[in-house]
Length: 461
Image 1 (spheres, rainbow, N blue to C red):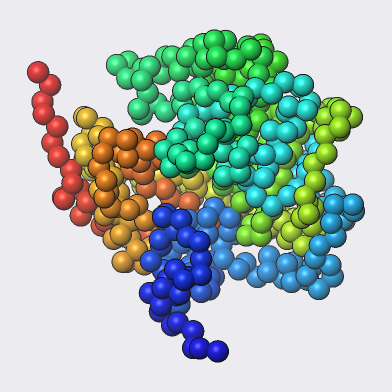
Image 2: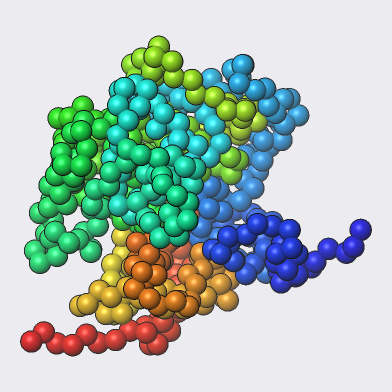
């Protein structure tokens, strides 16, 4: 066997020969091992991981107790198929029901966030006998055909694939920093909620099966709806007997400083989809709902199954993940350290022209970069500079690519995807001292990017 590469470049070159790689899978480093907040590439360079794998390693890389639970279960039994239930599957569902507010009680397990939303689509349609659904512009729910059909992006996520499955209508995003409905007002006027009601009543039957949404829209740029908006949309849905489905793929099990992000808004959705932080690193997702909805759907013939639904290895490892989060009080750590982090980011918002807004919940935070505060023009070039600087100095943020094509449609897709937003999502085990260490690098990158890309907007006439 030929000798294997020893450098990042060597592995990337070999990968180009054998991997079907999409254009965004271009990270310049090849991770080889990890320990807590840190990971090392094949060349031995250490990086602070501010992406938590991809929001999956809630506890940090290779937490010893987590790894032991995985290995212990692997020695017992790994996979059993769709005919059986497994003790770990039952215990994980029980633990989730104990954590979640009533009436959320019953869960189905599979592997990915896309899969959980796909199954939720089937569940709401079978339960209600209706096929239409509502989702948010800018929202992201997955790459399978059903989950892609309720992803409100467009651009490369839609082009060339032909028609999506029918039935989805999209309502405006509650994006207060760039809101079209209250941009000239001092505060939110819920105009986007009024527009949403109009979309529902004018472009659907008026009674869609469900409304799919992310309580914190991380992939769109860490957009946090207001509590008033959430409660108004829930009211609109309940008036029309529309189920609410909270996609908590990126926010479940402690990341936002509560077990679930929806708890920040004082309501309980009819259905919750979970992944990423549920498994803690292994591919595990869930659809969770009330016994009433679950039992009625099954009585109508709903059959959720997958070859890896409820696998003992995945469920036992996911259960260990949640038990560690619970026992080590990491939900509270995410709240406390997240508040400390946000306070530091707000100082940067006050000091730097390039920082338009700091926002987020818990340890799912971000900085929106602009060319200047007055125009709020998205600063893609500045975001690219900061992520490159962080990489060069040992902090891993997803690298924003330099703009090659600056036509209006490409720029629009970049903005819809939140490419001007630096997203900070470290493991929820992180300490305030580690936040300080990381912010030294981030702030230095921001100041360089400000010097090179910020501009002074013309004075108002």
